[in-house]
Image (cartoon, rainbow, N blue to C red; front, side, top):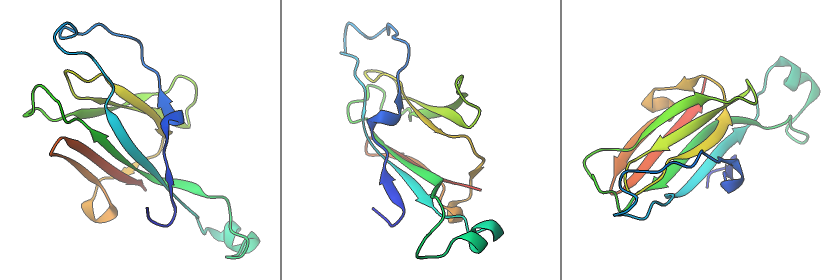
Length: 141
């Protein structure tokens, strides 16, 4: 873990409606294993510079996320898992990121902060699927 990273545990996972899949009789549907981190830090704007210092820092803000989702037993290993951003019905400050991979894995979703992403590789964006692991890293603008 890097400085400013915290474990993004299962308490942030959003429960999805139960679905019956076409492959449920052949493969037992299950949720994928995952290891997620949330990157937090300080915003040193004029207000925070005036009222806080390094000994007494301002409140930490979410600056980005790192998702590592493991799909070792995918039926179709050629087709990469995908993610979709959905609106959160409870709050405008958060949204739901939903990961879909296909059989034998169920969809998994997490509630994240609703901010605009940096899509440049130099700014920390990464979306890869290799050796059965989906890596999605992004920071906010």
